[in-house]
Image (cartoon, rainbow, N blue to C red; front, side):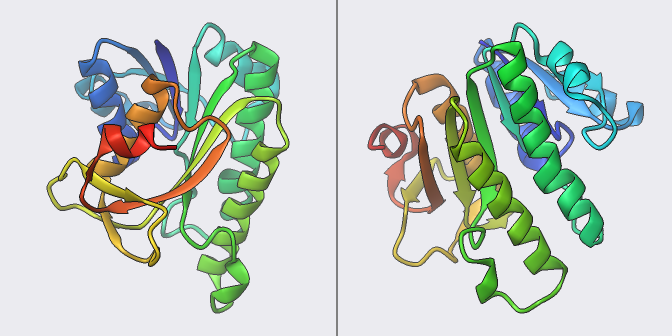
Amino acid sequence: MRIAIAGGHGQIARLLGQRLSGEGHDVVGLIRTPEQADDLRAAGMEPTVISLEDASVDDVAEVINGCDAVVFAAGGGPESGRARKWSVDLMGAVLLADAAEQAGVRRYVMVSSIGSDAPENVDAGVFQVYLYAKGGADADLRTRDLDWTIVRSGMLTDDAPTGQVTINPDQQRQPITRGDVAHTLAQVLTSGHAIRETFVVVNGTTPVDEAVASL
């Protein structure tokens, strides 16, 4: 497969790219600045410099043309303000979906977050704006005639990956390693499971491939 990852320099994105390229897939990482290119190459990814805040649908469609799937893993970043939550986390995801439709790329995997289905439950602030943006991006994707999957990760940690997860746990605010999120995303992309599914993933007791196959 040839897979494009928007937000290719993010921690989960690079772990995902490294896993996919190690499995023999071609991975294109979309990044905003050329200085990030070497980090992507080190992870086995092909860097492409393009800003989802400035590019047109045509620009992005040209970049992802010929891909089998796209992953939206971009974000304004923890230090960004309210405006970039909308311009990146929401509008960037919408732009990528528009471009996927134009380029004929049917498979779209969204990296979302717990709480994006109920941002009103979070105290007002930048984090609430982030959750509204993520929820809006998820809602937009569900209206598309694409083979979409929305993956909402639990509380992220940098611990060593376990290879075991729980899908849709009773308590969503549980931890999951970034490596296990990347593993789950890779399995979703390559297995053909979880199309038109939205699910929460946290660390648990079920091997990733079995957990994804259950969807």
